[in-house]
Length: 188
Length: 188
DNA sequence: GAAAAGTGTTGAGGATTCAAAACATGTCAA
DNA sequence: TTGACATGTTTTGAATCCTCAACACTTTTC
Image (tube, rainbow over all chains, first blue to last red; front, top):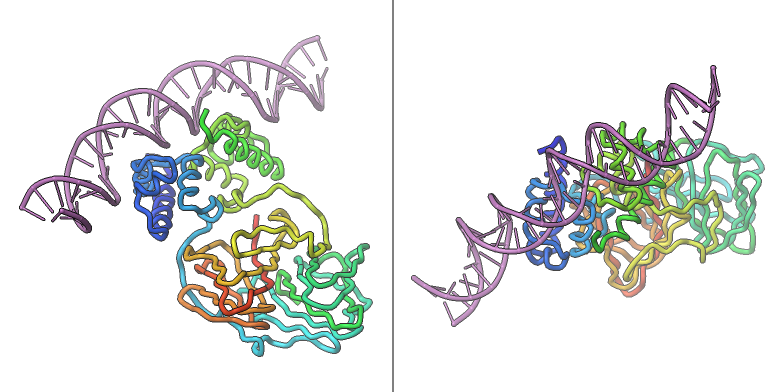
């Protein structure tokens, strides 16, 4: 028994939870996974530290990816959903910025629905702040300048850049532009 | 040598890429990870199928989580703009996930355009990962379950929650559902 | 009720992992 | 060159995984 015994148990319980959620018995899973039932039993009871290969075969039989497996866990909680009318408007001028929730508490990101009116422009002054930002254009067209690069994006196009680069957004074309963006951290 | 040899190599190359990106030698990582350098060498050259415990110790020394490790896709790119066709498709089944840029490294966020076909469902298995996620619905309707809470969202509605809560997305209604989401972190 | 088939949980043994230390390069400084 | 130190690779042996098989128990079937 090594110093990783507790980790083994944690891993075992995780496997058991997922297997049971999938409605499989140890033997049924073993058959699909090309592993013996004893292996699964030992893993689930924390008495064995499986090889990655064995675990992979087992998870393939569920099926679930290794990445998903190690990310899985059960847990419940607080304020989550926002109706369209509830998005808080923080824009000004020809630029409407609708924020998902408040930016203040314990948020790692700010998510915005941005609507640029005809010729709306974040201005000649380029913004620079810590963090990163990205988004996807929903409708209309917008010209984005990041550092020395400039591009016009249309519906479905997207962007992602480090916010420390100077950047500017400018609506172009005959139609207002809507995009969904996210930025981190939520500092202003 | 088993039938998982190619998988072993894949895993080894993955480890090597991440280790080198972290600027660590095999011995340096071995010391931090409380593993011997030979173990790392054998894994990287695909001659050994490590135990989960060993791999965990090694990744702790980098550090990177198991989930991140298995989610990592070697694909660099300082790109800023992405044409609609260039968004990388990472979904499966009735669920289309189009990612703005490709994976983890140096990114604080992942931004997705998610398209749920009729009755598409992320499944009963609930996911957990560190970080937070949020999004805005563009069209269609979707039922989102987060922990004990459940709600149906339509165009313009939004959500934001801690990713450690178990969550599930399920398309409802007669029309496919499109939403833009962001999640954090692909941390390091 | 007894047989049959299901469940998860143990031992024994061959196969594999993993640590320790040697091996094989290559680089840098004297 | 020579030595000192870095890199990744390989060998050897003890520890561990993993299979096969049997075990103990519950549920289903006749």
